[in-house]
Amino acid sequence: MFDEYQYDRALACYNRGQIDQAIDLLKPLLAEDPNQVHLHALLALCLLSKKRLYAAEYEVQLALSIDAQEPLCYSILARIYFLKNKMSQALENCDESLRLNPNYSDSLLLKSEIYSVLGETQKSLQCLNEAAKIEPDSIDISLAYGHYYFYKGDSEQALMYASEAMQKDPQNSEAAVLLGKIKLKQGDVDEALQLAKFSILNNPDSSEALKLFCDIKVRQNWFLGLWWRINSKLSSLSGTKASIVLIAFFLLFNLLSQLMEDLGYLGLSKVFSYGWLLLVVYSWVGLPMYQRKLQKELSQFRFNDDY
Image (cartoon, rainbow, N blue to C red):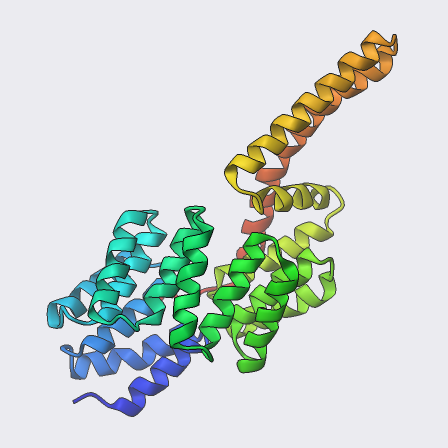
């Protein structure tokens, strides 16, 4: 029998985002008892947090070979498929997890996230509401609602749920990152920066916290700031709506250019004609500059790769 106290410590570290510490605690436990399904499952979750998908999949398959009826394993496997952009397999594993345990809220939350990515917002909200009935006081439910409303564009509702999550666990990195994203969107850059730094200190492996930190730096940059605002607005729209907005801008610039030419204002006509071209070039230049900025910020942090 494995040491439950050490397992609980590892689980607590994982929940706080202290992934390396959790792995260090799991290593001796697995060496002592390699046939404990929950040890392999928790290690898989830790590896998943570090984006080591193949190592996580190996661990979860080991766990399933020990106990093929453990719903947690199918939920982890669903998350791996989700990150691999294999949505149908992800949903299948969520359903298998829920077949084994209809009250397994983690799988419902993951289904909600998958449906949100697929653009099926009603199904996403339905899964969220089902999970909330099972665990109404869970911080994960508050975070899921916060993310749902943030990506839907409802900052007020998102702020309410993010603040609720922070009240439930003031040390929670994911809650701090979500709150930071909302604050940045609302223009409160200083508060967003403090939340990003807090998240990175608590969980240096959090790619979302590092991305938030970089977004803040870009937002403060005079050249990239406008590009970031435009890109943030477009990314909050569905693919269809974003395409419609871009086509509308293209038609507007061309219409104004043609109108100015018909009225005899050839100089203004050229301004509008070249204006669209400059906007396109700006968007092309902005993306690689943003990526370089992100890599520069990421390179300032050192990760522990000894596992």
